[in-house]
Length: 449
Image (cartoon, rainbow, N blue to C red; front, top):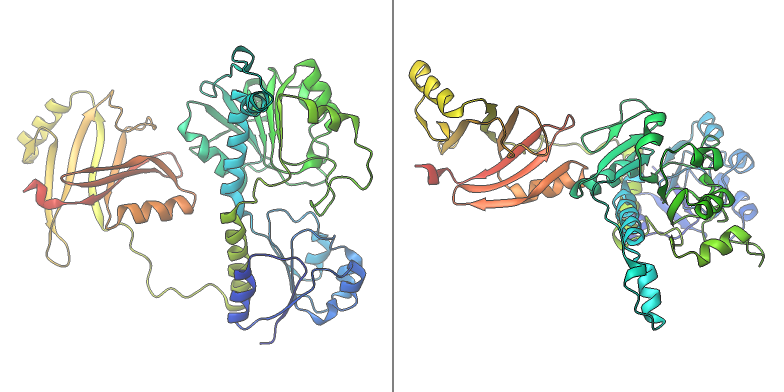
């Protein structure tokens, strides 16, 4: 298999190295013009890009042997996707690679705005010690609204779990809400939210979406965060809303004025009036399209692209046996109106050997080790099942609790609280897709004997 790949943007070296190790033929050209690339693109089966120039119909017509386009990033707006797909060209992106970075950046912008950190820092550096004018407000008790509940939106909602906030999401896709965010209609969204965070692609439907009509449709004044695409907001309308007080503050990692490559802002030196306002406003935080631009995401984005290219040609890696993460049921816990009375009933009529905690069932694993499973009723007002309000909680036995929790976190599973250690083992907690709390237990069964 002689699959030739042209890299037209620089990326993490692992992308090049791993593709080469897998037998792909890599060529690079980071400086030639679009026209110069077009003159030789027929030689290549794949192309790896970031955002240097647009992959349009003219380019695709000359790429007669192209089998895939891989963009190291989340969006595909620089590609004529419909035309590429009509030519049976596979489109590859890597939103999984920088979703955590984007989520942390969005949260950082909110906290900086609420606590006036940038303003206070600037004033102190200028010799001013102003406490009252830098009095902040708290995120707790607010309603945060996420528009676009895909990779980025879900990751951001997960970061908000540590705050006492209501999280709502709006998306054109149905049934995307989860235990981290409640999906609502746009009308309900506009009625309730205090903070709006955009996590949407740039498409004909989202272009200039945030305009005066959009902004004025909200019941309350609100803060806005944009880590998606600059052209999703009409900057002139944003500034008018800030001047009127309808928008309380803005965290903008992306700007309407960015060039397609995201590398520069303006072709000339004429700075738009609205942008001049943003530069001077104390309730605005600006960053140069770097929300997904961390050291870690630089590597992760490249790895996702490598994995997807390899999957296209070699299929998914063969797994000899499924990874065994759970090794047994550790317990079943449920709420009861009168736990003591219930335990006594099960002891009397079903013969369970009971104690103050319920009943322990002993069994042996395949190696002959003694193992236990606990059955326990809890009081109706217990907080042990929090943050859920469900009537039950499962406990599963695991071997490497901390290692498993790390894998689950990387896979986007919601982790609840921190690991707790006792004489009878380590405990951690997660939420399933329906919001049920699951307790994971790395047991020391001998402690019960």
